[in-house]
Image (cartoon, rainbow, N blue to C red; front, side, top):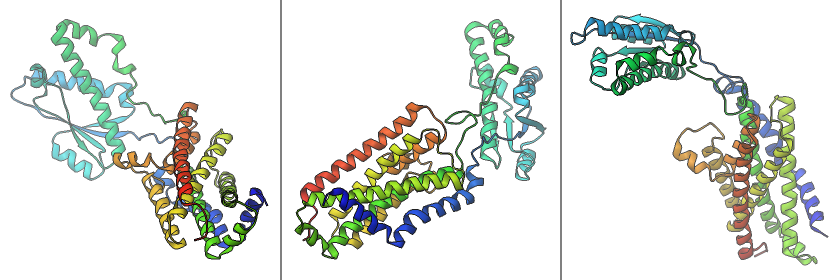
Length: 400
């Protein structure tokens, strides 16, 4: 009896358990369908999400400390800016007389964003201070960002002319302003792009297909842990050890059987999500195979570590489930998490690098970016494999 005999026997034994088939094959496909359908509107459909035209309210107030000509120069500059083709295409400007009127329009949904021009703006510019506008934010965060970006470009231009005038004199500032190279009408103020190739982004179905695949492949490690404990609890390990086989052969055969199960699970999930849900896994099928192999190694090693350090099957299952759910959560497998501290912790998990590897391929990113994530996944798997080897040498797999 060799390792592959034990491997095939282990695989046949597991496939006869209906609960295992349900949890490893049916449940992930069902969750991908539910999450992908329910959150498709929140995450997107895989197409570019270009912001709508921003309705902007502009409030300009007068001041006794500033001359009429100064106020007119600021108003003229602002009007010229908002009428340039690049800006006018992205926002619809409405002039407001008071701040209260603008706030009321924002609350009623008539405006998306508002800008208050301070009455002492010209005076501060004369004194060499930085030109700043006051934002009044609306309900849509994306449109707020668009409005802030556009008007920040306006203030940056004012500050640039102030700096040129202070250093080179007013004549140089006028010459620069009239130069065709800095014509604001020819500038692109916002570029809409994605991490990968243009016109490519991942949908909710793609995101959760990748995250659920990584999570449920780790559950194969829990199957490994239960299998190792099953031999002890049923006292069949004594019979196996009575055969002319070393403990290492028995142990390796059981790991190989569960590894083969995990790999079959991965291939079924990838193919079924592609055929049933239209999930685009990218154009690198062999890299998908490599990632699945690395996740399988990580899954088996975690299962072995938990099985060897736990006292009972129930405690091993509870510990394994806790580890899998925790890694999936902090890696953004259930929902993307924008907290920097959590993101730093997630970089030590299998799920993070597996998810990022899949997503980079879905976005058709550069090969160097894809390989970076795969290499990091390999590093995490290698560390887990080394830890499992050390624990096995100290504890071993035997009946006690």
